Image 1 (cartoon, rainbow, N blue to C red):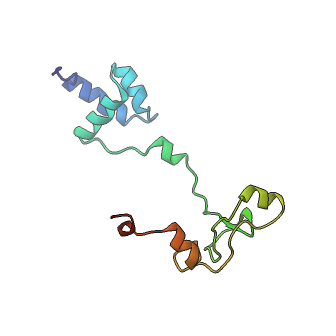
Image 2: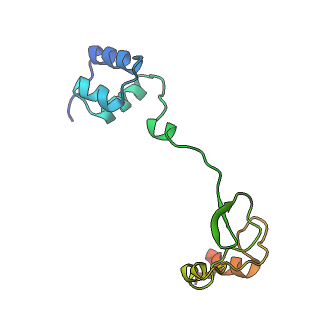
Image 3: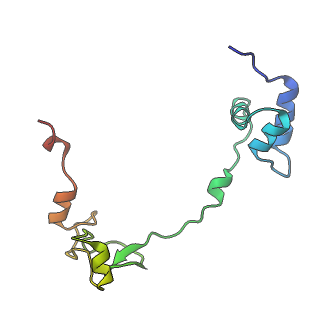
Length: 129
């Protein structure tokens, strides 16, 4: 087992860089200290430094879910009330201006009518034997 690279001096440098106003990335702190990003993250966690918000998640934008309706994608936001089981070739139907979906009323809590719900969802017991 290799000895830990962490010294009191490195801990102090990490703590200082972690709370810098310019908020360097963990990878940048690692390059500055001669360590890897994962070593920086692990040590920060072990010595109790405050969590930092992920730059990946802050860049994401919350958008409402869009559901299909009348064979066109994304022109309605809201609950699904018609069966969305696609019968046949959806691309061919859409190209002909037809609705590729079943269209029967869907079951509460499902996007399928009773018949298509039974086709799409089966119980594990049906396969055991």
